[in-house]
Image (cartoon, rainbow, N blue to C red):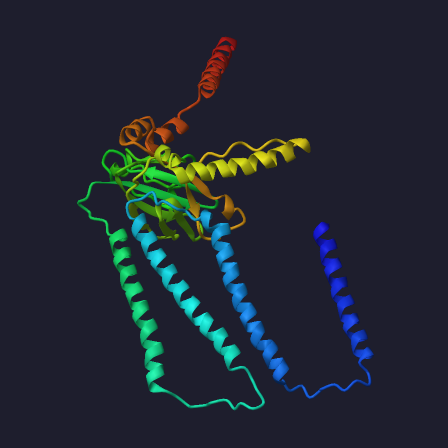
Length: 384
């Protein structure tokens, strides 16, 4: 309702200003006025100074934005390759900012310096081979360097040595949640097919496959620090994107195919929580939540819970109405804690057997039915 009132007020204000300009025009009747619609020196001067004003606005807003929102960046990467990704991004930002600063100053300065004048004629020439070479070669060279460095980074990140000691984990995407499947002791994932999805076997694991006998399916992703994790991705329905922001990793999850990448965590969750920048960030968030909670409690609502940092797996594709809610907690453990956690999880085969086993109540009902049937047969024989 408040937004509607604001819109109505703004519309009425615009109408009032429009009417005031019409009244002002009526007061100028009889006054000599230039209605030629051709810009004069005064108009050109005004436009020139406005160009400088707009240039100042661009840089003031840029500097303000850096101070205001600069602290919202992800900061320290939590994976081994994250530093390379950040380095590539920082180089790109520096190049973009330098080019933008240089070109914008020139554009606005020349717009002012060579603004229109009655006594000045515009210089015109059809082409300049030298200028064309310069302003084509410089961007091409810079982009080539960036692209080559990007390809080098991409190759290093995406290369997975088959002989390397990795942990194979499947991440399964569906609207609107994630499921993880661990390859177990053999470190080989069993076959899977969406046609085999039934009951607790939500990933369609082929339970007849020998490699699937030790697969473990969970809803919370645990990975060990210092160990390379080889992720394989599938999607059940639409295109999703597995995004690990703090690990600087992202890969599309495409229905009908398996995609993959690998990374090595370099911080446990507890270690990352203790980084000075993260401690300050969490404190700031909790201060905001605390202030908001006071307002909520005053209105009879429930206070917000304190925030604690966790790594997250997010979906970075708009995959439907609840896309924003598609996330999974990622916990980086020490290798000892990881092995202990994994050893406590049942395999998918065990879960299916447990789910399909007859319940005690069902056995009791079956026994009662047998007794009733036997009694009925005995009664009929006695009557004969």
